[in-house]
Amino acid sequence: MSRTIYVDNAATTPVSKPVLDAMTPYFCEAYGNPSSIFYSVGAAAGAALAAAREKAAAALGCEAAELFFTSCGSEADNWAIKGTARKFARHGKKHLITSSIEHHAVLHSMQALEREGFEVTYLPVDAEGFVSPADVEAAIRPDTALVTIMFANNEIGTIQPIEEIGDICRRHGVWFHTDAVQAVGAVPIDCHALPIDMLSLSAHKFNGPKGVGALYIRKGILPLNFMDGGGQERGRRAGTENVAGIVGLAAALEIAVNGLSEKRTHLAEMRDYVLTHLRGMPQVKINGTLDGGKRLPNNVNASFTAAEGESLLLMLDMRGICASSGSACASGSLDPSHVLLAIGLPHEIAHCSLRISFGVQNTMEDARAVCAALDEIVPAVRARSPLWHESNGSFI
Ligand SMILES: *Cc1c(COP(=O)(O)O)cnc(C)c1O
Image 1 (tube, protein in one colour):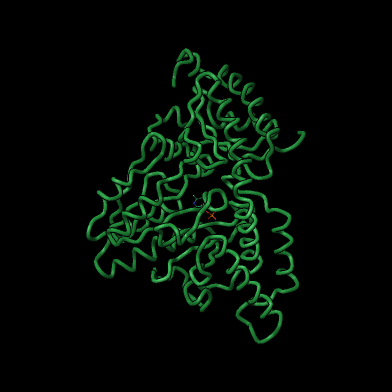
Image 2: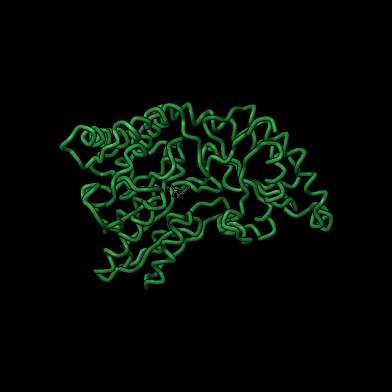
């Protein structure tokens, strides 16, 4: 195998060298517990933690006091949703609103709450994956505790009308959380300029380390704690802080936000090259919106008549190309992606889908290599597919 072309950056990204360098001192040198302030190794860790919080808050347009570090994006989602639901349940408000295309960290949190007696409205999306703000407004009831709608979708890249949805929530006095794990570091986000109350993010989606995330909680909002224990994170999230990880999160966020317009242009150039190429291929359907401004700059998702996603992935892998299928193969399930079904794809088309997500480390050469590979692989997979022969090549 020659070289690896990694185009699955929506799954995770490599840690960049400057981020690794920023983290390194906090493993073996300044290894102290940030709560142990009476000796210098502890104080050094505490100072690094405080500086990282300031840096990350500045990049997000919020105050350091509004930022709480967690163990991952999933924990931030769980905290926002369960902490809010259980708080308002004490006042008899047990209704929650979300969309049908959320990440499993949100959907499975909702299902857990349903088992505890909460009621959840799952809003549909249109064929491009957009939630309608009017649907959000119509779903709000006097007992609604929370609206949570993702900023941008991890499979099809659709960016939601967050400002309109947030304005509606404000008007109705309902807390609004957004899972911005895919959006942070990819599109401009200013927490204070947006009508949002809580926002989740995760470092490993923007060239930071795995196992560290954060929840922005607007001043004046107080969901119940999710992790009980010591008094870390101003008493809101127990557990000795992952100092190196948090320093890495802040460094990665600062780099991503400082270079954001360049990064977006670079990513969108690769995305649009592949999208244009795919639109020229026979029997291919692009999933998500064709409006580049409303799609994550790095996201490509398409379905290929009678060419199973898993087969495409295996053949791409043989060429050193790492991508992802639209189906939930990671969970070992044969069920196709809930996102692709929600935008109206039939099962047999959803199974024949591929997600390509670029990162800052990719080049136009990678984009061209992916297209050249697909030109060969798709007809080869189809040639072996009974479905293709039965359908006479006219499925989509
Ligand atoms: C990756 C991802 C998560 C989960 O983040 P982790 O840090 O891996 O737990 C949540 N939501 C979305 C949209 C994601 O893409």
